[in-house]
Amino acid sequence: MAFANFLGLMGVITGAIKAIVLPVLALVGSGGLADVDAAVKSVSTAVSADIASVAAFGIGGWIAGWVYAWIANWVLKATGGVTLETK
Image (cartoon, rainbow, N blue to C red; front, side, top):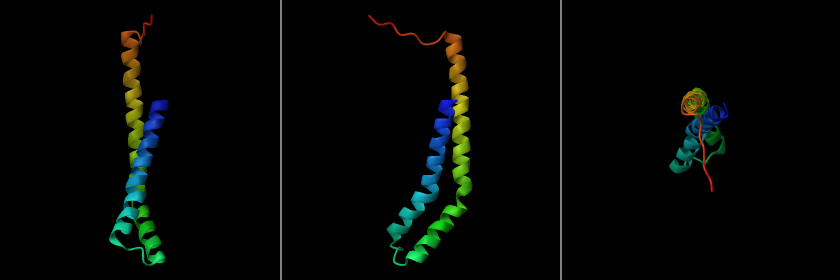
C-alpha cells in the first residue's frame, strides 16, 4: 500500500507540474509578465482549468501503484519470497 501511495503522490506532482509549472514557464517564455495582475489572472485561469488533470494523474498513479503492489505480492507469495545469501 505504501508503494501505491508513493505512485499516487508522484501522479499528483506530475499533474501539478503540467497544470501549474508549465503555464508559468510558458508565460515567462512569452514575455507576458509585464503586468503582474494579467500574469496572475492568466496563470490562475490555466491552473483552474486543469485541476481535473491533477486529480486524474493522482488517482491513476495510486491505482497503478496498488495494482503493481498486488501483483508483486502474488509473485513473492508464489516464489516463496526473496532470499539473499551472504558469506
